[in-house]
Length: 131
Length: 140
Ligand SMILES: Nc1ncnc2c1ncn2[C@@H]1O[C@H](COP(=O)(O)OP(=O)(O)O)[C@@H](O)[C@H]1O
Ligand SMILES: [Mg+2]
Image (cartoon, rainbow over all chains, first blue to last red; front, side):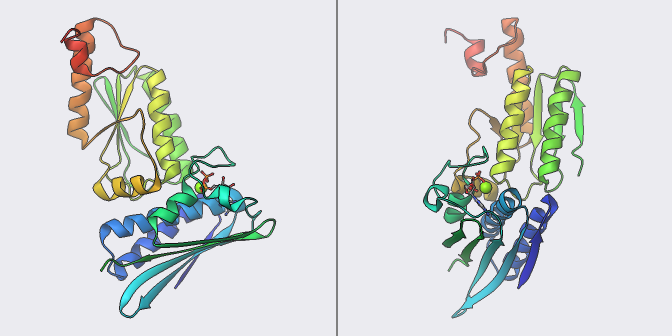
């Protein structure tokens, strides 16, 4: 289990490097490791951009011998007003590409977004090893 | 992390050697736009072979670099997007619309050379990037 505090742009790199290392440890293929690292990058970037600080937690899962990695991106930032819109391709309140959240949903196997307006956001996503 | 930029004839070659932070990416964009003007470059190659992840921000920065240097008369070719990255970019929903890509540095240089030759044959610099073949054989 890893907790990576996200406060600066260098932390985004640290988080995805930790993800990569954990993916290797779990025996993920190089494609899956890249998908995982890309998802972590998007989530860490969102923390930095919208909440200014937060953390990425990485957990190694094992379900009946099948390994997976859970990514939890947590912050106590402004939260998301309209979650449904935030999950649409191209929606951005910062002039970005608006592909981060919907992209993470496609890159990972499971995706859950919980956000309370004014109180923060938690994104939980899992990537399972291919079998 | 500084990205070395090499001047090779009418071209600039920027080789990204490791993962870049947002600040590094912004710096790279400033540097390249400035140097394309300073050296009157006709082409720019950005080699991303060593890049671990191209997320939406990095991808947009590459696109911006290509468009900005395009306004300054240089064509940008992004080279070295390996298979895993390409896969992840497609899943993210990213596109490099309007940006030329090539498999590696050699291919990128060959592309720019073909482009230069066709431009010389026409005796002017094109504002729009039509295929080199069309320029060489306008009627063919
Ligand atoms: N951690 C967060 N806290 C608050 N708002 C967020 C967070 N993550 C995403 N958002 C909101 O969801 C929108 C969509 O996010 P995303 O898909 O990553 O696209 P982008 O970051 O390019 O805008 C953002 O523009 C922002 O309004
Ligand atoms: Mg984002």
